[in-house]
Image 1: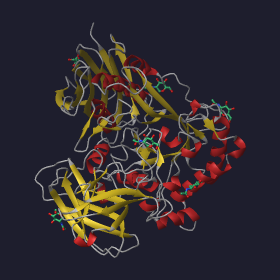
Image 2: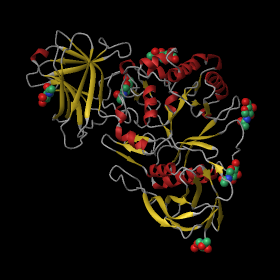
Image 3: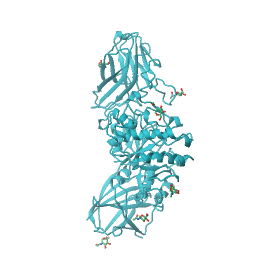
Length: 617
Ligand SMILES: *[C@@H]1O[C@H](CO)[C@@H](O)[C@H](O)[C@H]1NC(C)=O
Ligand SMILES: *[C@@H]1O[C@H](CO)[C@@H](O)[C@H](O)[C@H]1NC(C)=O
Ligand SMILES: *[C@@H]1O[C@H](CO)[C@@H](O)[C@H](O)[C@H]1NC(C)=O
Ligand SMILES: *[C@@H]1O[C@H](CO)[C@@H](O)[C@H](O)[C@H]1NC(C)=O
Ligand SMILES: *[C@@H]1O[C@H](CO)[C@@H](O)[C@H](O)[C@H]1NC(C)=O
Ligand SMILES: *[C@@H]1O[C@H](CO)[C@@H](O)[C@H](O)[C@H]1NC(C)=O
């Protein structure tokens, strides 16, 4: 029997929410430090070791050999109250050439043609040694790729800045950053160092900014909102280890790192204000997640002790939204940003269905926040009955069969109640089951595509959609699947990236009714909508089966033009984009012709997600 879908523009459709897709962000899978945060040095301020234990000099080495010099962590020569250690270099002999220190970076340091590197550090020296210091980017075997000299050290810490331009023809990553001396003057003397930075080019030339290739890959999705800073990583492994906004702002030498929930040290080099710049630079609306009295060791702040934590959040909000006459608005201006931000969405906590205390915690934070910011849209993370909410944040990490089954999850969901809509704040098909150990395969992409097709069918009520997690460093994954993969050299994306990109691009304002004849949902799933401004209609369809699906489309209440365009992501279920084969799944575009003004025959490829774009008269 013929499969017919009739697209109805002759009956009113529901309004769809514009700008549905955005990003959910937290530092997981080494995606922040070592990833989008473009700082290239590792263990750059000796606050703690990689797993949050006692500080050490891991990732630092002696240049010139142990006989010529030694290094030590020196707690007697701290830079300030926050950076209480320093790296001490004791120079014994320079008779065999230069001696110094080197940093391995985050699995190497990328040096590429036409890039300028900026380095900085604090340094001082004993016994009148004043320099010079030779700052280098060099291969791990010692070939110097770029160098610059600084002079004028004294017995108190000063900050030094250099620019390094490498004269290289191709990209390499097996490199280190070095600081060395070669003057006889240095022999027998000690040098102390703290708070190093090394940045290549950054996105939008932002100081302390983003690695450009990763930022461009995020921008490639054209995300409309940014939920940050977590996720679990907001919450802390204990109440005291929560993400504290005040320790993430100001000059780098005043920032305090913390042991993140994903079990590695977070430097907070990328902090609250940096996240806001990221949000602005990528043209997104901020969705600020605030700490709400619960940590992941299952401890809750008792109701009568919540006050200081509420104050902490109110200070954070004032730092972002207050003008310069306020205490924290003034602090923001001192940190370089005079103009206040707007924070239209504030989420209270994260996945609070883990706890039994959300009722009183939500109520307390809700009351304080809405009293001062009555226009803010408040997002609740779990069911509670104490106070209303604007959106509720639902998360889905399930198998492909279960995800496909959720196609109609919101179809019969009550549209009224205390909330005006749904924020699908995290989802990803985990083909091997929850959680975090499944490939970002085409199979996963197809199930995710079915799910978002269902969300778009309900986009009168589903207001925001974000996948999670988005980004992972290759071989440092703590949670698979992820959408964007990188190593020190390059970036590549999973199949679902391309589906989300095209679903987002072909954004409709009205969900059209579709009548089916001779066909049910499965293996083909669909949604249709119209975009008045562009005078187009879109049919988005996912075929999770291994056979082609031929469909006769009829259009009622509209005339389609002759030439249409299909955007397709297709492949075998096991296909993945890997480091060696990053382009296995690529989106493609093909042309088609309609039969006449009211009909189209189209055949969907096996294992595919497709957007049909039709111009209308
Ligand atoms: C970090 O320090 C802790 C405690 O001192 C220690 O147990 C752990 O092995 C260290 N981790 C690394 C990666 O060195
Ligand atoms: C730094 O040291 C390297 C290796 O000895 C040398 O080639 C380079 O010229 C030095 N750079 C400066 C600025 O002194
Ligand atoms: C940040 O604020 C919290 C209270 O909200 C306080 O406990 C902590 O000491 C502050 N951190 C710094 C470095 O001042
Ligand atoms: C709405 O909130 C009120 C309290 O403000 C609560 O009693 C009621 O159960 C809530 N209704 C829904 C549908 O969540
Ligand atoms: C519009 O939304 C209602 C639920 O509120 C639903 O019953 C109806 O099928 C939807 N119409 C379309 C065209 O999606
Ligand atoms: C349009 O084409 C379809 C399929 O070929 C056909 O069934 C229908 O009669 C045609 N309609 C018009 C108005 O020509």
